[in-house]
Image (tube, rainbow, N blue to C red):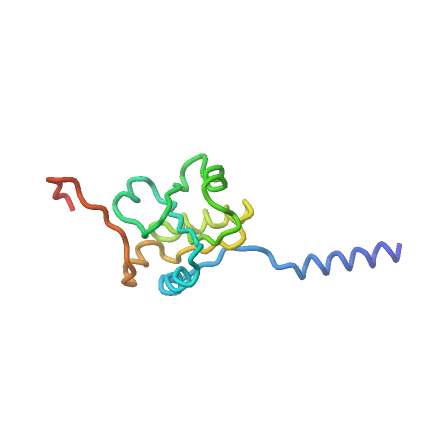
Length: 138
């Protein structure tokens, strides 16, 4: 019985010492610096197709968080061994998507705090596709 208790204590200690993998929330300035220093990082936009068409971060790939196949697409289209920065409009969806990516086994997941709204407010560059000829709605 004493041996079992010692084995349990050792196992519990080793599990407690192992850090839990979590996503990291980053302010826009820190995220921009991290992206510049991490050339292999992917940028994941989890907004809708309509939002993405309005504006997005350069080199972002779109996998909407609301799509029922989000997890399957993320696993297929992204390399879980490479770092990824996730963003949405304000930060709520990207935080949820980042947590889902961690559960899928992604090792280095960052979430843009405040989303693309904070990114643009911080003066970081965004891509705004050209409007179709004759469209002056924006």
